[in-house]
Length: 441
Image (cartoon, rainbow, N blue to C red; front, top):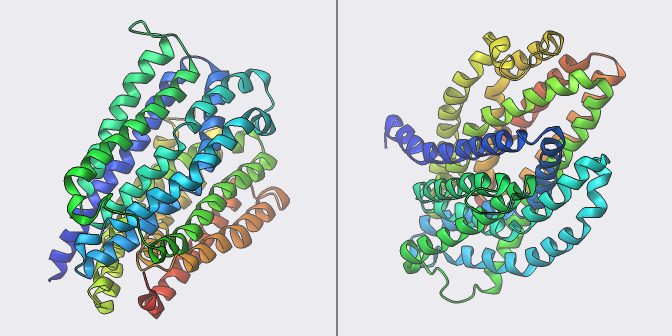
């Protein structure tokens, strides 16, 4: 296969995943716009509740990478007729562990929500909103597992199709339930939570129907997985779930550090972080595509080809993400001006956004190789590197150079660029070393 053909394969697998991820962010913006019309308390309650919901589901998101690694390996080995068995295992584990987890959190929301925001008006809005969102945790975990399966068998369009269905349901129900249209009760911000929960269950039902149609011959829902499959699923998924949980906790710590710098700095940083999270989505998406290509190559017992796929995906992702970084590096005021209208706050965010735009390719390298390692089954190694770099390098450095030494946002974003460079370098060294090829999945 020529280089051009390999790049086309990466784009063919990665672009639908990019589309799906971007559509999720569009949905979040629509939700925010609808709830924003209800006032600052509603917006703050939904914002806080959404973040807490992300932390609640962070751990169960690890099942997606476990499923994808095992499925892609089975396909590469020529065992297509049992490639859905890992998905069966993930769905079983989710039912066993996630239902009681969601029930416990639902009961505890009135207790822990005020610890994050003690405004009575915000609590009154945020508690029922978060409780409604928590009713969808089980479906979210299952949906992520299905995503790993569809990507593992190179059918990302089915994932994208289901997201479109989910988003349409969510937006429609938001309009009906938030504002009390079509004879429905006017639930306000709680209606947004109910709409989100219903939409993820609709997504799960859609995935089940697609599974019955497209994965029955791959072993979908045909018998229970054996103990070895369950153990392997846990070995691959638990480290990634812990990594996701600590990653979200790291952002909580970062916002505490930003709060020590000042309110205006926190406002500017909030915008920059949201821009960052959108800009790195293609890097994550191409990394997920790389995980499939690597896993299938290893299933064919071809570690050299797996190695090449990792670097090929890095090349495509760097080119794609680098183009997104140019406007941030060259025209930061144009981007920040969409969200920030205070000249002093905008000035605080200008250089940090330029730093991020100029170094975004480092994120692309790190994200692709991290996911490639996950595709090879090296989940424990990636969790240690990612969590260690964030908690032992970046967060202490951000506190020292930011509020302690007084370099503010610029110092914090320089620290972040260094942290991303170190992390990308470690993942590149691990990938080049090739020990991941010996991991059994």
